[in-house]
Length: 138
Image (cartoon, rainbow, N blue to C red):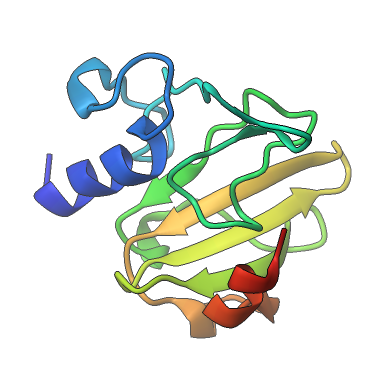
């Protein structure tokens, strides 16, 4: 596994996971590089479960406590199509140059979080959230 992928999984998933704080328990998830054994173990009152490694606005799970973010090395390796069935809502470029996307699949009423380990902001049509806006969130 490439170092950038290993580091991303440890940063975005292992942080706050009940199964461990490093990649030693990694299980490959079909269709993504993310760890399928991830279980968020961090609870923030009154928000509920959060993904500790993600910034505000992207970390809250709400009623979907078992939501696992999808991680890809780049936009082209993802098999995801953004359309009327899978709508990106927010995007953010991290200081590491990773693109975070929060969205919803309205047909099934299920949210999703996508992490691309590159800057692919121009390829995703949705609202861009700045670092300043993230800092202003509760």
